[in-house]
Image (cartoon, rainbow over all chains, first blue to last red; front, side):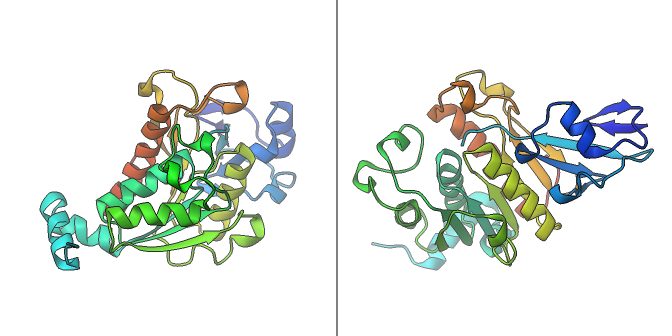
Length: 64
Length: 211
């Protein structure tokens, strides 16, 4: 199981970029942490989710 | 008459306590973006007696900024990196300010925050926020980073909160209210979010890493 933003999902073996794209995330407006470390944007395509991973997706909105 | 550095510091110690003030005084904080969030954050940090700040922005003071940003009519047209240090000097003349007129790109980040104890993200655009977070967390993985996410509109101030993500990232805001949805930026709600950011910075400097 993989935990994404607090929700446990059966995503072992899934590709991070594919999952983000399928769920409508724009890679230019997000930051992703995997097990408390930032995932470089260039590594999204090469990141395969593994059992026990904890993923936090920060979705930015404009304003400041 | 200008109070001496010693008198100034003693007054802050009296308010904040000696140990806490020593930590604030020894700290260097970067504020990236000097708009509604950043100008308010910098004013709050100066009032708290933070010893050193790195202020970064590329823009000039515009009439449309005065509804929420810490600038004055007399400063219209000035670079924010010139106008804000003027104001801060009226609040704490002994705060050491370094101002950089710069539109930060990914390439600028390595080296930019050397020596900073905390980095504040206070940009306007979502893409710029994401770029700074990515770059700062990659290049400075152990430096706490406080970011503003969602403060547009005039919804309840109670929806704005501080949340810790991972080891070093703190997100302040309601997470959803977006300027691009046609929502305005209003002084009070932007200031609430700025105060969340400034408060988290001061908590970190005081030694408390929990949101």
